[in-house]
Amino acid sequence: MVTSLMRRWKIRRLYNRKRWRHARRLCEHELETQNHDFATDIIVRSLYNEGLWKPLIDFTEQYPRADYKIYAQKAQRKLNQAREEAEGIPEPKNKKPWNVSDLLSNWTQEENRLWLRHPWGWAHWDMPEGYLLNDTHPALLHLALEVLLFPWVPETKHWVVEQRMPGANNSLSYSGGVDSTAAMLLLPKDTILAYHERNFTSMLNHSLPHSTFEAIEKRTGRSILCIPSNHEKIRTHHELQTGFSSANAACVHLILLADHLDLCSISFGTVIENTWLEKGLKFREFQNSYYWNHWPKKFEKAGLSYVLPINHISEAGALKICNQSVFADVVNSCLRGNGDRWCGTCWKCFHKNGPLGREIDATSKEISTYLNKKPLRTAQHALWALKIQNLEHLAPHLIEHIADDLSWWDKAYEPGLNLIEEPLRSIVREKTESYLEWMAEPYALLNVDLDM
Image (tube, rainbow, N blue to C red; front, side):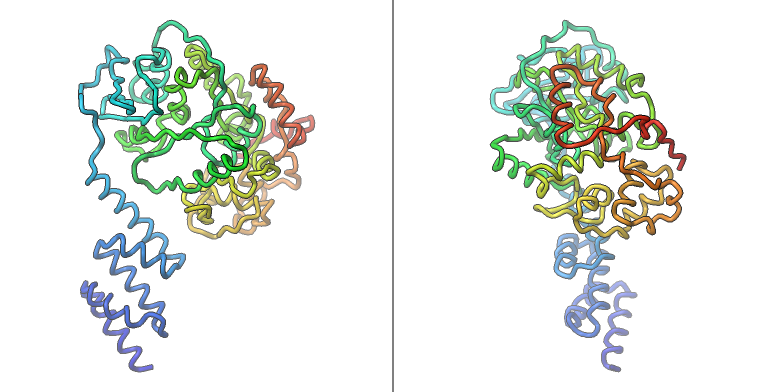
């Protein structure tokens, strides 16, 4: 025992003197001994202090522990940053400055890569064989500019061109997640599914959606069109995290491909929490909102119907639809999982995978943080997720908001069908009724007002 304590004292002394490499080497001899936990802790901290990101990630995978995840995540971010710095930001061969007076001149194509010159750099999309920028209607290019840049370039909101004639095919901006898959299941089977794929390194992992895509193709013969792009980097020029410039930037790949794919509509997996509930907190008459009265008109100018096939369904309803489908075992909304395994510690795992009966760690740092945030994200669904999983004890401050009866939450809100034009409305109605019951009047949804 004395010898063991002495070895720990020596290692600790080396570590405190910032002789991390030496401390780490000595700890390697302590693994699988009574000093094992002490040794792994010193090794992880030393590798982090030394900036040895890949060995740190490898070590935490070999010796997993919940409190090492934060080190592994930080190391992965450092690796990604270094890789991006080494690779550089892609640029076209023929460079030109941003032109605000002739917005369409900012689009160019080199081989299969479509380029957009924006005020802060370049964005690109790797298009399918046969795509031609010159065959793309100006209205589509203007609409793409607006959904990508309007938060920072107001000129993109005002465009007047000849209206594009609609094509023949429906499409869905498909993510492989629960809501998106529920939308797929309510739409016609010939709906084109297209996935936007980040083609730069980030914490987001594409392996889970790709495992879902493979299952869909194997079980139904339907393929998912994947379009790599870096356009989520645009907002990082405004001190914002990587992500979509606007909600509709999630479908920009389909806007740009609308002529190539002969599209008449673009659908989204947008649920009640983002339509009839404002930020999941309070009921609103969504059909009167600025959003609904602005964007469908803009898409119509580009010959595209703006379709929300699950606007009348909550996340709980989407889960219920997926759970009754042949994709119940493969659909997943987790963005950090690997292969076909979800992470179990993120907010999406809490309110998506947990209610599906999948193993999660409801006490993880992220889940605990979100449960204590004000306002509570996707509040009505989060309350339902707590109740359905018997986890109310994790958020005692929310118990007063959890009604005795939330059975209405996984049912469908029939008035939402009025936002869907025929012939899709009838199709969506029929398929909705094959999976869900309708909410009974008077609608409990109208009374949602969560002041948290």
